[in-house]
Amino acid sequence: MDDELTSKEFLPDITIQDFPLRNKSLYSRIRRRKWTNETSGKVITRNWIV
Image (tube, rainbow, N blue to C red; front, side, top):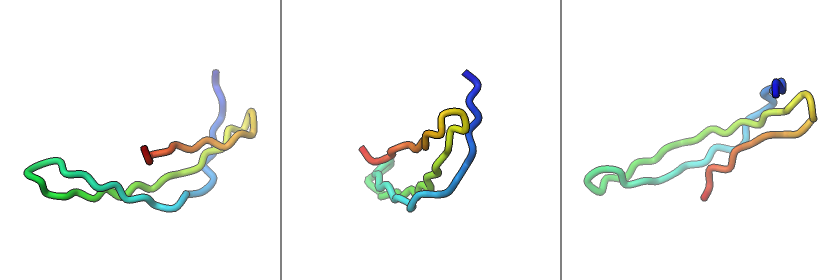
């Protein structure tokens, strides 16, 4: 399936907090993007919040 995807815009940033080593907090800022499938017209995003 060779669908053509086009980047359209960014969604609001999200910040994820983690404690990876020695109980020190780590904050990761995620910039999410919207993509449009030019074949079907559907908008594709990824949900990082679990």
